[in-house]
Image (cartoon, one colour):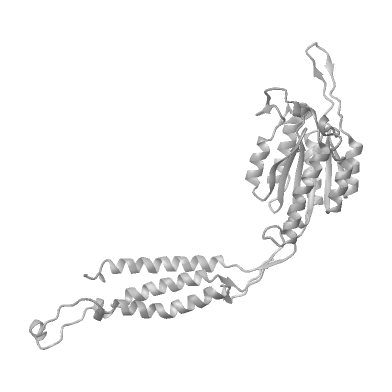
Length: 375
């Protein structure tokens, strides 16, 4: 709802207001004094009447308006100061935008290369389908409304968890980083070599890292940092197709996923978990047999993670179900940030800048043509 009142007021700082007022008061006097004909070099004649007779020499309109360039420049400076003083319309603007902080935690272990999801009629890797649907979730495509007002970040994990994109409203940058994210050892959708990091799934580490990213966003919101207000509500979307399987050398110290989820819950973070099971599609082996990929997702653990944080668990068997899941999460996590009161000052500033430039243009034209002085 928008409503405006006609009055205008200003919001300059006290120092700026004082200096600006003094400058405006003294500027006309300085410029008029500097451009006064009496202060410029002239030729003195002992008998002026011999040049023009007994009557005084006639004065042109340029001579009569000798102060006009100074007046124009003073006016331009005054208008610029008007713009710098932040003119603000007195009408109240009510904004009911919605926004939260969302951390996408994406499994990029080797099992995510299984081609049991379909996109546009073609079988693709699980990770490709997930990335595509998440991109639609962020930008608003495929019947998803988009999350333009949210802070969104991304963490990927296989053997180790890694922050791919900090929480940001820069959706274009987020999507670019999402597209570059891939399974270790894969480049542009092709496996270049067998990377040992792709054999593990550090689920607990991923939850801890995602929690830390959201925690810092929450601290910024509490501190009142500009733009951090939506971070008062924090959500994590955890997608995996496996069970917790940290690196062998780190298994003793690796956090338990459920315990990590309890820490997230203590910080007010809600975790939605998605088990990417994939379709039961038969695949032909080099020996001519058909094998059915088996889903090794630990659904019980994912359900418990969602339960202790107040979230929900979803099972994704194909791309359509992924879209449905993200659509449901989108509807569940819409938060009204409340009415924010601010004033529209852009219109007055733009008009002031145009007027100042026009006046300066006229002044420059005059001092270089009819009002040009020698020397």
